[in-house]
Image 1 (cartoon, rainbow, N blue to C red):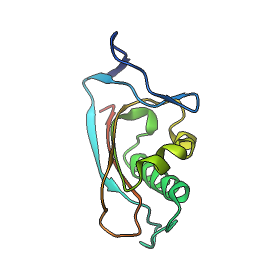
Image 2 (cartoon, rainbow, N blue to C red):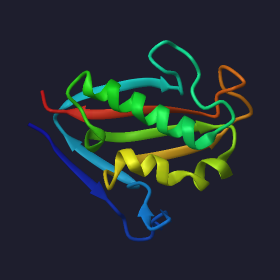
Image 3 (cartoon, helix red, strand yellow):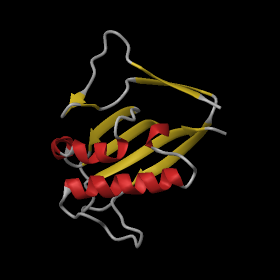
Length: 136
């Protein structure tokens, strides 16, 4: 059994985009099993790149892949405590934030978004790493 709490310290702003709170600045977790996902990219089950040149399509595929990876260990987006996003176009990423919300809903985690020059292949626009905590 574990306990998780999202903390919103006084003195820190809350990031809201299109009416959705994007992350919790602090997440505390008392005993549980840590789950680490490698950087998840926009590939289908056959390894083909999905959504070349289309940020929305890539966000959706990345979050489908995250959902699949989490489910493989009995986790959901509600169990995610940290998300780190790398994107080649931060403005396009934020324009399509609702695509991410389709998967995460109101489940909050800590979050960092970083614009990078390039990912592991020039057709990738986004890569996301995740840490989750599940019951042992």
